[in-house]
Image (tube, rainbow, N blue to C red):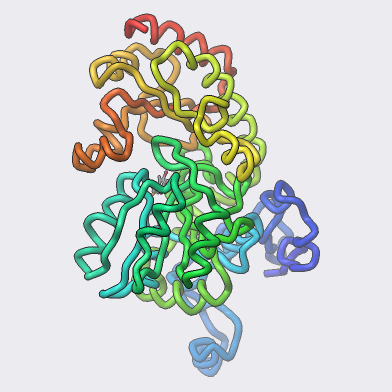
Length: 401
Ligand SMILES: *Cc1c(COP(=O)(O)O)cnc(C)c1O
């Protein structure tokens, strides 16, 4: 493999984010292929026994086994790290594998973690169910209020874990305030940046230590594969995360890595267009539905904060109708927009979180998170916005709105 300009640190440092997304991390074989090569191999061979020994001893550069290294996966890791402005990145099989690894690699029995209360359902399961089983205490706070993080700190607090914007209520966390607070107390911040992606928000610029991704969402962007990623300092990725992932095996398939590499080439274009479409759809719904939660609209209580830390507000937002019955009626009346719990797709998708993504969260915790019975979450795709408005107009009418 020939290292290309995409792996030259000095050159890539000068590139703007959209260029990094297209070219970052690319390496070519002797064939000089334009598009990244797909290495579907689980293992590697050695010229001599001494080479194998040297590689295992870390004295010779080279790959040993695809749970640990793979050329296609490495290209993706380089690219994501560059887009993030991070020293290093490690990919995983899914977003949840990334979240689980980012937390378990650094927490031990007796430690304490503070988590944001509005979160992806499985992230809440980690904080509420899995970590306590291993003697890791967690406190869940309203992450919109930095003071709640401050009040929750204990002598054994090791990690702050939150999403911004958060799924599905679009709570926005003040990255600067919360990351500064964590720094002062020697606490590591882990930010789930799946909704914004590095194309719209780079939490490390505001002081975050670790960012974690579901690359399944906007990074693939076309609803094809599952993938995840964790970014951090070289020391965090190599010395803290890697011992955990190499021995527990949440490794990303080279095929899926290749698909995400292709997805990243168009991420900037897609996410900006989808953000514009989402704003247009949000403006249409405002006033027509009882409540709308869209950080791009001035009516959102954290609109100014969202504008400060994000380049655009992304394709996802939520709104409320009267209750579960009306929410389901609206979904059933849709003709263009699909009923789907996925997000980040180029297709517009709508879901009722209380009966799908957040059904596993206890009803009282759901209410507390703001996942009400009438809440609907919309992922706005790349269709012509006028067609989306037509579909919503007729579906709202049929649902009695
Ligand atoms: C989807 C999602 C996850 C989980 O990612 P998977 O790739 O589905 O495992 C985690 N956090 C957020 C915010 C998500 O939207």
